[in-house]
Image 1: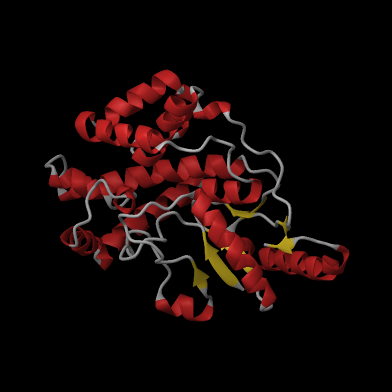
Image 2: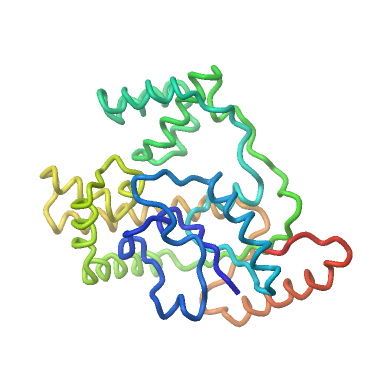
Length: 289
């Protein structure tokens, strides 16, 4: 089995503690792909993830491995399974104008414009996600239609057979684990990791530095937070993100939900699925994943 990482932040180099990347001991016994493939100042999106996954899955399968896509970016998984929305191509000129507005007027100005022209998309986006806010406005200004007007594919992509497994916990347990994880991140040296990234020239405007556990440090640098408030804000933002992601995951059809304590049942489910796919290859079954 090989893991194809679908976490939107673990793709970034030098961002290990705040993204909870697997340690060397885990990687030795369970290979992970798509870790540490771009620098924090590079954009990585669902389209690029899909292209990488389309390349890796046949490669892993040909060698007799089981490709398992895992991670926290529900949007990446949805786009990989169903395809990307049929939005129009971008405009370099419009994008440049919007980025100039972002620098001169700030993100709140662009958010207000997006709320006016495309309230559905504005409500679905993270208020700090400047990349997707700019993209949504770019679509509107280029095509004259809001991004939300473009249909999201409803049928799974051809060529694959999917087994979708979701892990769920009681909300109290999930939130407790989030708090413990944030505390552990600081113990492991998150502050030093962020300090090192900043010393290398990365700023709050870089895509990687907008992730939870990193962006909050820039609020502290502005004098808005003390160290205690910093940790509390990361915990709050993490809980809110987890809630949004669970809502998104539950909107994906056909997911089989288990608790982490049901490891045996999950293993049996994967084994049966893989066996059926292997047996069905001769009859034209799609690539399993």
